[in-house]
Figure 1 (cartoon, rainbow, N blue to C red):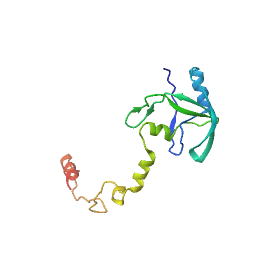
Figure 2 (cartoon, rainbow, N blue to C red):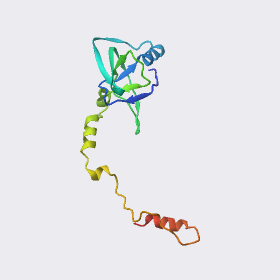
Figure 3 (spheres, one colour):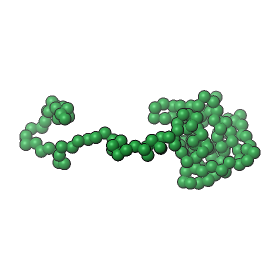
Figure 4 (cartoon, one colour):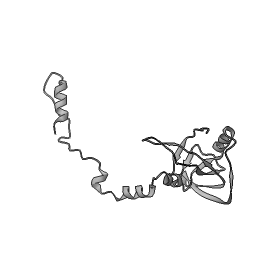
Length: 152
């Protein structure tokens, strides 16, 4: 299997995973065995910036995405629309996110349903608005700093 690295971006507004024309041509140059499938009906898809693109072709690609946790990849090939416009990035759409078990709509619902206490993060109690003023002419020792950090 040949690898082809592309910059990519997740787009929760895009129903489909999309590759732009220039990236598609680069991929085909490196691996001419990648097949193009002509669609019976063109698919209109919305991408970043509310831009609509039309696809007349698709392909099936094995995709690996590097996440914060680790690289992830679906078990099989993924349908990818080939669009006639050039994007700087391979667009990961809701179809691929769903295949990976990521429910973007559910995550957005959970985010919107959080109450004020959850939105504010961990509570931080401040005892004073100003930093403490020390009257000592010597610098604090490591023990003093540790004690200040450990104190509630």
